[in-house]
View 1: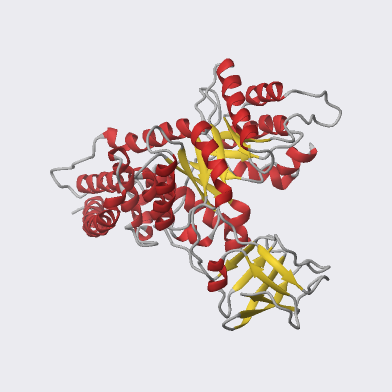
View 2: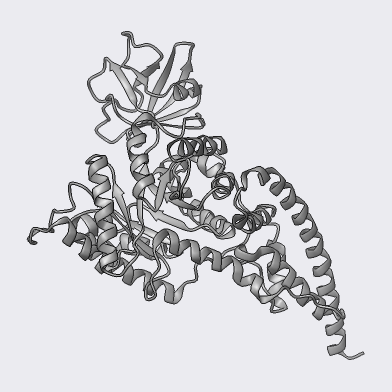
Length: 503
């Protein structure tokens, strides 16, 4: 036997060994995925979502790093390393097995039909167009522009005054594919009027521009306070109490009982977006003592109304508060997308029960799951299926909140894994907010913002906040996305399974 013949026999034996190992992994994947689908079965009311859920179950069934040992051997045979197979994982593995069968000299190689590989991306593309608009000549990522009631008629510095209608025409003409109505100002009549005007202007321009409304949901805040009108610094202490009475340190009550119940020793409490941060050092039946661990250099004030979040605890909050109902009623009448922060499958069920109470029949907006807490990140696969099994679903990466919850060091990792997970689930992703912020507000860019804008290109849609220079920012953002897509693919990473959040 010649050297070449011996090498060929060794390669055939290697291909046979790889095929045996991959077949074992494939069988284990089937068993795990079917178990996951059995758990999700009652949630899936829409048959059209079943293939997406099935592919997501396949993706989740792979243990982290389980495919990594195969990558180099597959590359040596010139076949797929499976590192971009999220949209069609099962078919991709079957195609590799068929190629290995040919290489090893087996008589039969059963390749999946070509159509199987196109089905998942086609479903994702259709959902992207439905949620964020469809344009023939545009970047892959759509651009969503925010609209504020008070600032819509405010011109850039030195510009001419403008009407709301003319502003909308310029905004859509500049390339806004979708619009988000900011509910921080105005009321239900203002929001309804703006949504109707946006739809009429888009129709007059021959465009379909979806409208999104965000429901804030119940948040925990400092309810009342006694004592301590100065600034707190690292090492100072304050107390969270159930009932407000005077003490030797500043005392506060919280607006959400669930947060009070979740305060245990070692729990980290963040106030006012993390400007004031402390750790619970002593927990009692009616009061909790907190030691301040982080503040700005000049210290931080503690005031009623400041938002409160917890790290290391997962309090269960209702999906909606009484203050959310006016916005929800407007959204059900006028919005294409409804963004909401839900933390658990139980909260998803409660949310849909409220939707059915308000609107028993008729079409509903697509639900955009706003992922802004560690708990939502941990439950993301279940949230997607519990929502997508009943209506259209998308995912919004709330980057500032996630950075605060998980740490800035983990933000890039978390963003990437959300992209891969949603690609497996065939669910569009909205990247928000904070992009081009200096350009939007001040009319000038920074190098960091340009780089960040380029890194957003894997998303299905990116959001720009409202400001004096939003129209200019849309054009700049579109150019950045187009250039990024010339040189970078949407995802190219090691397919390692979804690693659920841990501290």
